[in-house]
Length: 476
Image 1 (spheres, rainbow, N blue to C red):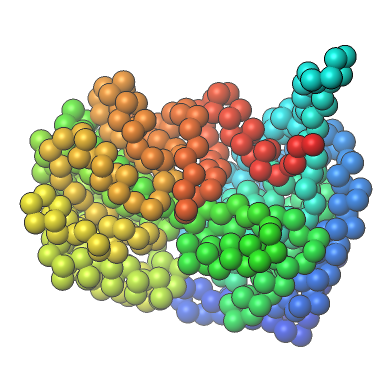
Image 2 (cartoon, rainbow, N blue to C red; image 1 turned 180 degrees about the vertical axis):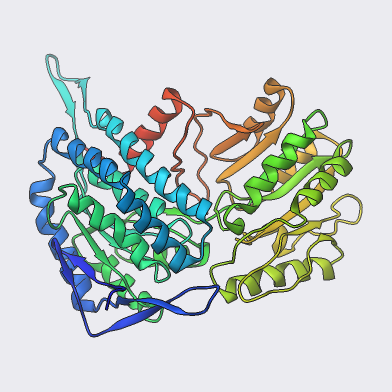
């Protein structure tokens, strides 16, 4: 079958009679099949990674760098571009723009990764013993279980394996059941670039079998660390399972990004930036601008500008009917609770939902507090507005969340924006329309790291590189 995605274990594709269907969320048609990994397959994948670790741990920096440079060169070719576009659109119904972002972003990540090797260093420290010294070395951990999501299947699958492998670890990549073929491209790419057999192994599992297989992968004695990007509900399950075996996790469990718009902001620019940030990939991005907190002096202008931009906005489908149902139920709950529906028809066509704008009334009545549309990630095309008088109120509401992945501040005064951003608990701040370097990683229950392909320059890239390297090595 042309569209059957195999497993990849120990450098070889692995087929099986057990498969599951991949269904396009818009057409509802079966667009491919994937091998459904068994318990024995998962065991074999970890065993292959453990064997490969014995030699990969001792590979040279030059060898590793050469593989990733070659992978970037291959991914930039027309054949890989076409493959990426076709698979992501077929499996997730993503727009051409989003597919292109996955392709170009992954090329950039591969190239940027070659600069991280300078962080694989050690330290020599003075000892309390006269004439002695302490030699601190960075050592790879072993086998890493990486679980990647479907919403940016190429970029996030690469992110899940790239730094662990750079650090000398080996990896078992478990794909999303919604995008196995898209994520298998990473495995094909790296092995074509020269990655030795067993360093990267790949398994896909059906939705029904995923809980059991994931638990078995986590419990394998050779697995030393788990990374997962996805929902907080599944993240809790994975963290609980890992805790049973005293294994550390790295979790990125979504966001509810606040955007603060101050009275002196450029409203036209802020409106464009917010619409882009909120509705890219139909809002199915962990850093989507879901909460807009605007000062009263410019609130009518901003809301009108965003409403005009959203009318007739052509956005794509959500990844499932269940996701679409959840988005609409959150908006309906808010409206029933007294919120004002500024834009949207509360309808679903297949898995497609139009942009919805909602205004909550915290001032005075307190309408909106406790509503899911304000407190929980919608992962859909929804923006919630709250109007405030003061900056202090805006900061308080921005921080009134369990999430702290990203935030934004719009002001014509960069220094004011920086002061406000410093008060918001978020790992990354967008000031005006550009990402700036704030070397503060805030860790909360729903975000234990921030991995971003920052365009800002050396300072932030270096901070990011160090943060990543520390996650995947032990110091001894």
